[in-house]
Length: 206
Image (cartoon, rainbow, N blue to C red):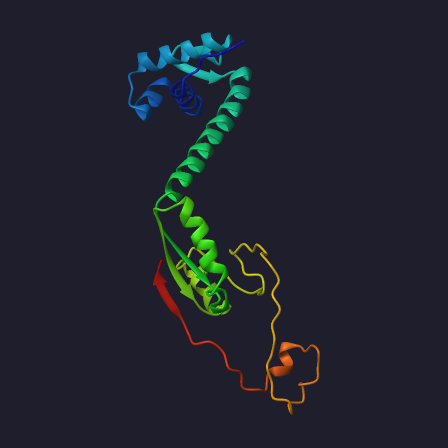
């Protein structure tokens, strides 16, 4: 059996079910009470059973109405979620994204990613940042950036992690250095040595 139920009928039913008062529900919905009563009657006619017990001006959800209300709330929630997903997709077709990454990723990986993405989404602009993982995470938590590519770090509340790839790190030391003949080391073993690294933050729009 096919039911023809309009969105406003579900909204009207939910409001009446919550208030259990046609007058109050009509005020909330900004419609006349007779129009609201006709809409509920039409809904009951469509589904084939009464949803309320009526006694004068008093109405109470019957057992069918209580069950129906649960499914109406679920259905309305799912529809709203679907609308939000589509709105998010629409917003992704234009606007600006703040995207941050490690300095070592700026020469190859990030340009390739942006080139591929922009070929399919030409109206989106990127504001790009380069920095160290700790600073990138601070920017992410403060809302300064939308997402970042960084090295693994401790689990941070409110941040979701998605592993992309593993990358080897190499340390260049003089031939006379105590670690020169080692095939692998722990980063902590370099704690007392001066280290040459990249300069600080860069930000630009792409």
